[in-house]
Length: 72
Image (cartoon, rainbow, N blue to C red; front, side, top):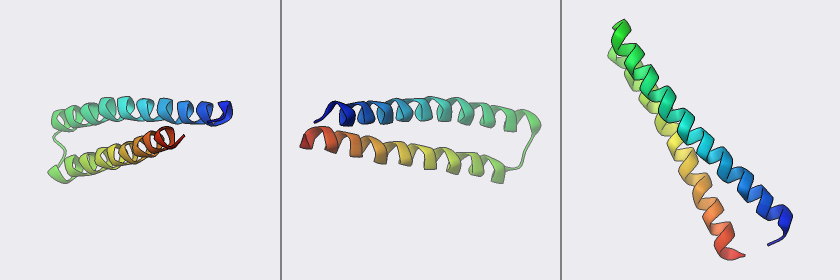
């Protein structure tokens, strides 16, 4: 693996970690705020679906990073 490829994978890994951390914080904050404001249940499901989409994206990118490192 070239140094440039290694840096690219490291950048992707950092991005995944930021997305995971931000998703957890925003998801918990949105759930708490929704409960405090008395929002309808459909908004809670909207927050949940958005968080799940971010987690699935992070899982896919992490699998790609893992495969790229394993293949090199």
